[in-house]
Length: 320
Image (cartoon, rainbow, N blue to C red; front, side):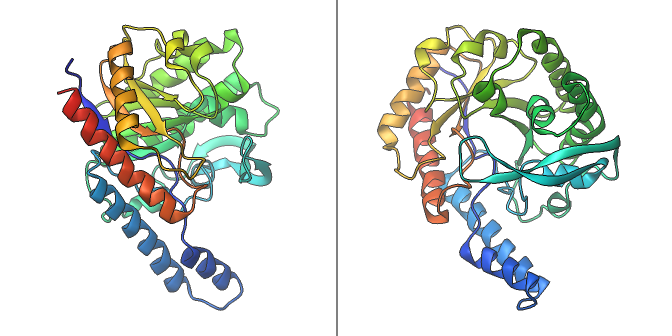
């Protein structure tokens, strides 16, 4: 079979010890902000070099300067704050929960680390929280689906429009909340409406929704009908046999484990992706990790990125 195949690395890339030391040092007056910026730039250059070495099809900035998936968006907006530390699912990492404090407004539409993105080659991808994740992780007294639509219209949509206007070719929406905690049947309609807003905002680019941290199988019939170009599946947690066939959309195959250090054999991983393509018959195949890489040591994460490129090359050859 012949199907378009592309590979990219989404989400957060781990910070080096140099960045950690520099940021701690500046808080204690031992280093300067210029030294912190230089350490961050070195990490970004390392991640870009790993993506180049892997021959990936799109480039990410690795969210190197993002404290978590929400805070740069909170910083863009009025009516929100981020104070309370919350565990990130079943990991040993934490995020500061977005907290609604007033009417949502947007002070600017581009996160600060994107304002000068010249260090990242084109074509570029951006990682954002999905509307469902954003609304469920937030602290609020507001009805959740109403908040989801407000967050979409006031924050996620204008940010998406700004990124696409800057030439971003792919908007990758992280969605761990749905497979980890589940979703009520009555919520699907609002999820679809929120994603339709982002689909309209991303005209000229690709929009994908990537589930992680759980089994997507119980939800796949609804997921594959959502208004996105591709649906991502965590294949560490999900059985291929649960996913049906004759997909109407593309598949984002999360095949490398971003939560564990062992490096997957290239040939076995490629064989599995080929089986995914032959079983699902998707409109496109996107290869990536099952989750972001920030919980791994940086050198392990770099090897995972390079391995991703090796798997992609094998898959492209076999599905040519």
